[in-house]
Length: 471
Image 1 (tube, helix red, strand yellow):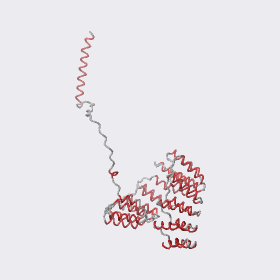
Image 2 (image 1 turned 120 degrees about the vertical axis):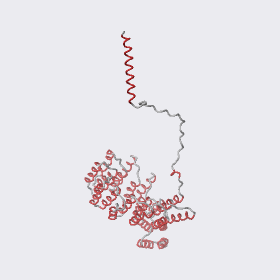
Image 3 (image 1 turned 30 degrees about the vertical axis):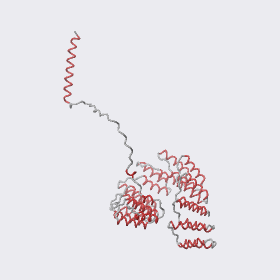
Image 4 (image 1 turned 90 degrees about the vertical axis):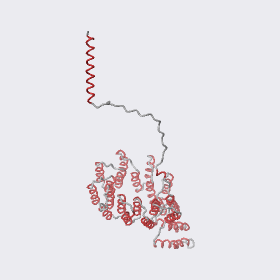
C-alpha cells in the first residue's frame, strides 16, 4: 500500500523537476554551457624546412674591403683604392668607409678630408657610425677642432645627427681639456635639437671631476635631477672617484649608501675605487678583504679589482708578492689580460729588471695573451734603461711585426744606444722603419744623432751618417 502511493508521488516530483529545468533553460542563451572544440582533421606531420641563413650571412665579402684591412701603409691603401677603380670596380659607401677607417687609424687625416670632399660631391649616402668613428680618431690624435668641425658639417653629407654623435664630440672636447667649449655645446644642446641623456651628463661630470672642480660637477648633477634624467652607476662612480682621490673615504662611502638607497647597485669599478683609496691610505689588507667581501654583496670581483692590489704591491716593490697574487688568480681560474701583465712588466723595467720582465712577456704569449703597444714600449724602454740595446732591438722588431708603433723618444734612445755600443749596422733598419711610419724627429734630435754617430769610429758609422743626412 505504501509502495503504491510512493510510485505516483515519485512520478509527480520527476515531472515538476523536469518542467522547472525546462523553464530555467529558456532564460539562458541556447547552446551548451561548455561546448567541445571541433576536432581538427588529422593531417600528415609537417616536414621541417631546412635551415635558411639570414640574408646578411649570404652576402659575399667585398674584395676591396677585405684587401684594405690587410694594409698598414696609408699610401698603399690609397693606391689600392685607385687600382680597383681602374679595374672597373664601383666604389660605394662600404669601400669609402673601410678606407677612411684605415686612414684615420693611420693618422692620415689629409687623405680623409679629400675622401670626404669626394663623397660630398658624388652624393654618397653615409651612416652616422662613420662620422662617430672619425670624430673619435680626431680626439685620439689631439685634434678637437677637426672633430667639432666634422660634427657641424655632418648634415651637408646627407647624414642626420643623433645623441650618439653629439656625445662623441662632447667626450672628445672633455678628453682634450676643452671643458669650457664642451660646456657651451652642452648648454646649446636644445637649440641643436638634442635632449641630453645620462651619457651626456656623465661626460660633463667626468670633465669637472677630473679638473677637480666638485662644485661644477654638483651643479651638473643637480641639473640632471631637475631634467628628470636618472643618474647611473657611472654617474656615482665619477663622484666617488673624486673623493677617493682626495682620500676622503667617508664621503665616498656615503655616496655608495646613497646610490644603494636609490636602487643603483655598486659594480666592480665602484669597489675598485674604494680599494684604491684604501691602498693609498696604507690599508692593503682592508682593500683585499673588501675584494672578497664584495662577492657576498652580489658583485663578482673582476680584473680591475685584482689590478688595484697588483699595482699597490708593485709600487711598494713587493714584486714577489705580486707574483703570488698572479698565481692566486690562476688558481681561481681568472683569465689574466694584458693590463695585469703590463703592471708587473712596468715596475720590473723601472727597477732595472728587464730580463725578468722579458720572461713575463714570453709567458703571457705562451698563455695566449697578446701584448699590446704599451707592453712593447715598456720593454724597449726597459732594455734601453739598462743599456741592453740588442734586447731592445729584438723587442722593437717583434713590435713592428705585430703592427704596433713605437714612440719617437724610444727610437731616439735605441738608436743612440746602438751607436754607442758599436751596433751601427742595425741603425738603418730602425731609421727605415721610422720612414715607413712617417715618424719625424725634430732638428735637435737629428743633431744629437749626427754628433753621436760622428763621435764613434768614422768608417763604421758612415752608413748611419748617410742615413741621418738623407732624412
